[in-house]
Length: 205
Image 1 (cartoon, rainbow, N blue to C red):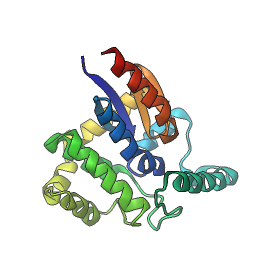
Image 2: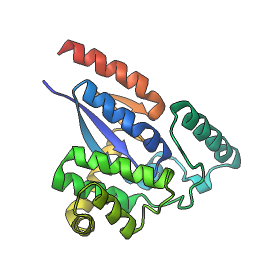
Image 3: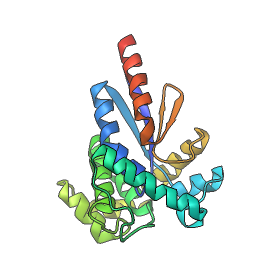
Image 4: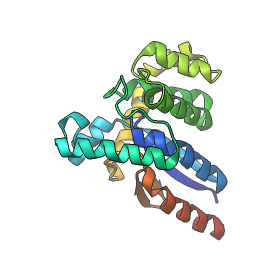
């Protein structure tokens, strides 16, 4: 019986950027299938009491930068703490990821998530800009123009809404969020716990 893990993400999240590649590698190592679910973080926040960055207390905003710098150094990942195009809407990129997933499968969509995250947090590019998104898709040997057009369609919007509804039903209130065998794991800093769960479940197969 195959193992599956739900992966709820927001394309604009710095913690998605820092955890994405590690999570994908863990899932592949333990033979876990990823159920990729880009979600509307704004709707998740509004339903769970969360606040967008600009509305958080100054001390919370300040400590967030400390933590980001700390994790960037620890993981050896480059990170612009205050990139030029942030805050930014994650909706356009999330819908492009979903369009890619529908057309080319989860693996290619996961590649695009990595490219989008890197574009925002390392290259300081605008991931809400159509031309940027098309170029990112093209860089992965995809037809960016066609996928961008598809991302504006009703089927992609329906999938995005369904992912967000699933997130609410699962008690999600941040990103990244993983659900494995009924257990939630919030944040890239919980990947060690998730790996232990993967290893245990894999050993029982």
